[in-house]
Image (cartoon, rainbow, N blue to C red; front, side):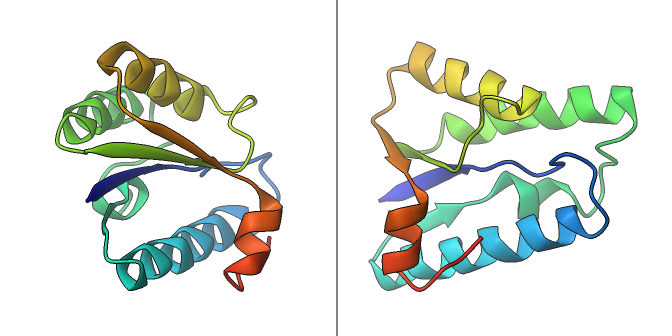
Length: 116
């Protein structure tokens, strides 16, 4: 199953937070592969060539995220996206598309061997 991952990326602006989030998303994607899924990580697909701090590029990234999401069979929301502008927009779009949603919390991540 193709699984689109929603996960906070920018965070609260703490030093190294983006890198930690990106590494954590990579761990989650690897676990999805072990489970037999095809992970779709917009963070990994877009952050290498679009600057999230540049408003025009961020808008392009969000549009592309929505396009990528249409390819997914399910959407997994990892972590708290309530304070994430992008994550909230992605979740609302997934709901509009009526994608099956799965909310993954810290306890489930810990069971997979993934920590914050």
